[in-house]
Length: 242
Image (spheres, rainbow, N blue to C red):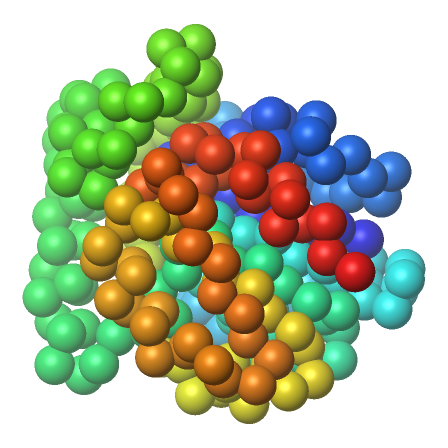
């Protein structure tokens, strides 16, 4: 079964253009913790949520799960590979950050806490206005307006408390570092790391994985962080993995 795992503020519909280009009869796109309306309930810790999510999936078909995750969803996919490699056939991780160093974690935790405060004090619409101005999304000026409008509409469907809960359980500061675990797991579970050519930060982050056994990095031209949104055609080619 192919499982699509969306990014923060996204949802199952984020993958609709990609799924149309890479149809598969056996697919599933769950809501991740804190997303949707009402917000998807879940566990209280990163590891427990990874285990809970696996329990909702069926890895029995075709030798295991075929994971496709973007950003938050890529980290969740990495968590599934790290904790349950025997249940995963292969994984495509789009724009992943596989964990922080101890020195990086406090600053990230403070930033995520500030986002939670903004959500709870100002509400979803004001938060989305702020989120969409982050430098990470600068390359999206090339995206067709209707696709950007669909992304914004998806973001506005969430609840403030749900998104805050997502950050408090599944934020990067809550995630264990998975770099070395993924290197080891990739010997049995092939991984493709997908990064937009304009996503300088994540090109640098994922550079140490280049050449590791079982790991292939694909750099997509004319795309930034959100390759799912910006270059679904190129990503569909990545998914044609035999």
